[in-house]
Image 1: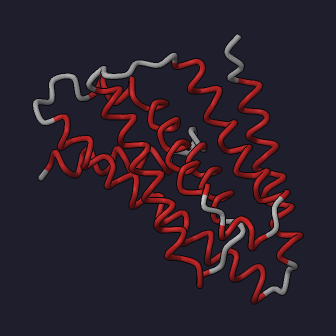
Image 2 (image 1 turned 90 degrees about the vertical axis):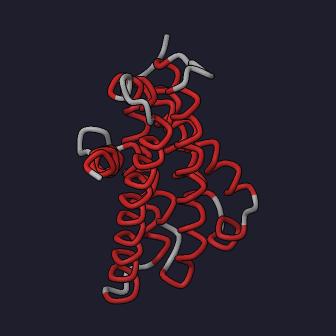
Image 3 (image 1 turned 90 degrees about the horizontal axis):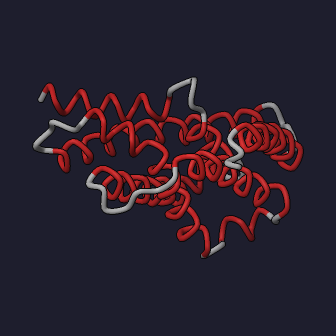
Length: 192
């Protein structure tokens, strides 16, 4: 059980680490156009992201697929930027009904997972139960992501319903702030 909590906490901390805000930014941007009534859709997308994240961690951990870390670190903020742009330039109904969101969320999860693959491989090198450890880690990731999404839904509710802030302005401000961070991270991680 001690091993479970170690990897669960590692996954949880990976998402909520203040020095690595990529998950946080992505999830805020993903959640931004939605309210509580659409929570099921968001939970599905977060779980799809976690599946992609876990698949790439498995592929990386067992050295089935090795990727250039510089390119992964470059692509991560691009996925965040694309998510922000989809909020800024699409109508709410188009984004909430888009069938491409499942695929793109899976793909973004895969990219984000490769970003953590090398580190996970180093800490689980002597672990005979690496596959189980990866699943424990994934549960921690999922739990932390759900906390972020539910917190953002609560913030959306407070800002829009309680404080009567216009939805479009709220989305514009938050998406623009996150996009500016994504651009900064992209420039910082330029691979060439």
